[in-house]
Length: 126
Image 1 (cartoon, rainbow, N blue to C red):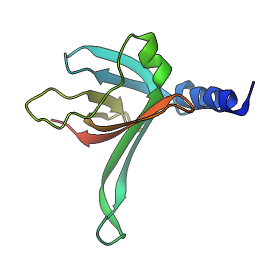
Image 2: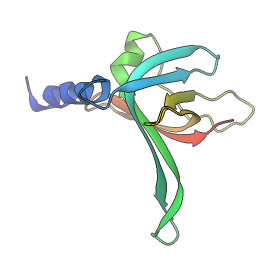
Image 3: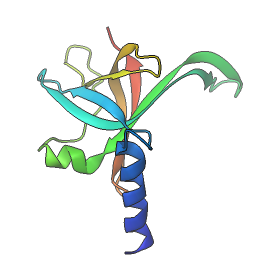
């Protein structure tokens, strides 16, 4: 096994292991309204960098990371950000560490085809 395969295996373990890794349930709702359940990593923090000043400011930055192979196994395309507000976006649901539900839309999708994960930058969705 080469180092790239090893890195993919480690990423899968970290993302999907719900006991010893960071794995937690994440639900994607595709633009057609169909739910798809995954296990992955979520991130929701309250400090961001102001691009004009470079200073840390209070804000909200949420992301998720899941396995590309899980999308392939479900016969799905990777989620994408949909800028047109007249169209339905990809929606992401997950719970924070305290069990509170949160609902976001995919603003940007960043596949890493080296280790087989896709990270999505999220925005609050009503």
